[in-house]
Amino acid sequence: MKNRERSCELVILQTSDIHGNLMPISYGNNQEVEYGLAKLALPLKEEMKQADNSFLIDNGDLIQGTPLTYHHARHQPNEQNPMVKILNYLKYDAAVIGNHEFNYGQDLLEKAVSESNFPWLSANILESGTNQPAFGRPFMIKEFDNGLRVALLGLTTHYIPNWENPNHIKGLEFPDAYSTAKEWVKYLQQNEQFDLLIVSYHGGIECEPETGEPAETLTGENQGYRICTEIEGIDVLLTGHQHRKLVCELNGVTVVQPGFNAQSFGKIQVSFEFSYGKWQVKDKSAAIIEVNEAKAEQAILELAKSYEIQSQKWLDQPIGTIVGDMSVRSAFDIRMEDNPLIEFINKVQMDAAGADISATALFHNESPGFPAEVTMRDIVSNYIYPNTLKVIRITGADLKAALEKSALYFDVKDGELIVNPSFEKPKPQHYNYDMWEGIQYTLDISRPAGERVTELNYKDEPVKSDASYDVVMNNYRAGGGGNYPMFKGKPVLREIQRDMTEILADYFKKHGIIHATCNHNWRVIH
Image 1 (cartoon, one colour):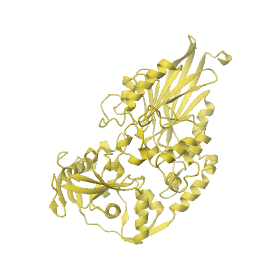
Image 2: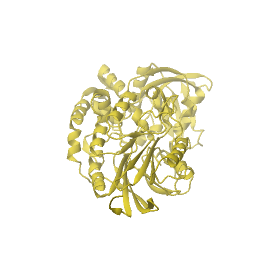
Image 3: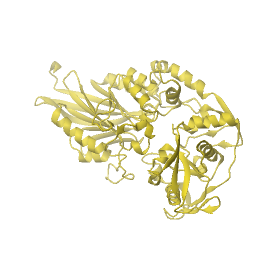
Image 4: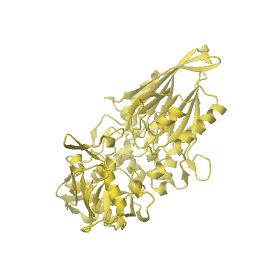
């Protein structure tokens, strides 16, 4: 131990759910925003500069989420991944694989891992039929100059098969994250020497930290609370996936979740004293550091410049014209009754898939809709996920159950219709409210949950519970994603293995002029 130190401090810095937000701009209008890794960089570097010992970790969902990362994946796949390039520059120590890392397929993920100057960790993503991690390794130990040894175990929500395109996870297994954590914590305790144990888990906290009451349906998607309260020996749990900003202590474990889109990062300070021949934890504290009005780091802007120029050229490609109105003035109103934008997206899905019933969503409340002159920028501003399409065969009972699930999006307060708080907290889930074309239906929110579908017709005839219906929807929903179990395991009649952004763009290019129409086949009342 150098200089006979009797005390030291470690600063753990965590980013999570950056989702491709490298540049500090909104691609919908190119206006500057107060987030993005280029802006997060200087505060991060300042924290590392001030720290005697630092450990910089990304907690997953890094390489997908913006037009820049989409354009790279589809049009520049042979170039170094732009997100990895910046993490290399910032000298990250490790990264954990998130669920969205698979959105562009394993080839792109494997290439990103191979280009990294840091290890990617995930103890519970395995090659099928083996116990071998498919990417990187389960854990790492970082030893500092003063002999301090810090173990880091990486975990990923095992719920990925419920969402992801099966072709993107072929040959992989996703064992339970909690069970894997328990197994590896025991292994580390018995076989490795370390002074602090960090678990970096791309998953969230499923229960309220203060009360232990479930904060969501306990599907196993998020297990952070259980990991903290049922596994002894963990000092720090880094979480993500839910896009929350959270700092708390659970069973002596310091827990942090630092938000999303590179708006902020987590900082955990751990002080140690050297006694009985090893470093002992004396104190821990945690905080979330906001970007606020930080300047973008020029070096990062330069490193990203070529990617950005090509992305902007692609985004500005004109692809079609709309006659009429497909704009979004109120996301809430769009979800209240049939409208030209949602009807158009559903019709494109039906055209691509050869189906006459379709479901889609307005994925986020910042969707601007389509202007009169449409470019690729407008496509990716509205359809923000790299979804493909599936046609599945369901029963009338399944269809009604799905509509009842969507009807839970609304609630009534003081006689007024509002968004059910469970769709906004702990994580916004507006993308889990579907709107349908090819059927006629009414949702009456004044009625009890489960009894809100008061009209449901197909071709002007009531939908029959035991009859079969072929419907098109995105691959996420077709696999039951968003807690739609009625779709899980249903017969898949067709798969359209092209991103919806490409399908929409091709539809515009083929037809040139699109007329905004609305047949008012559905409505929400209360």
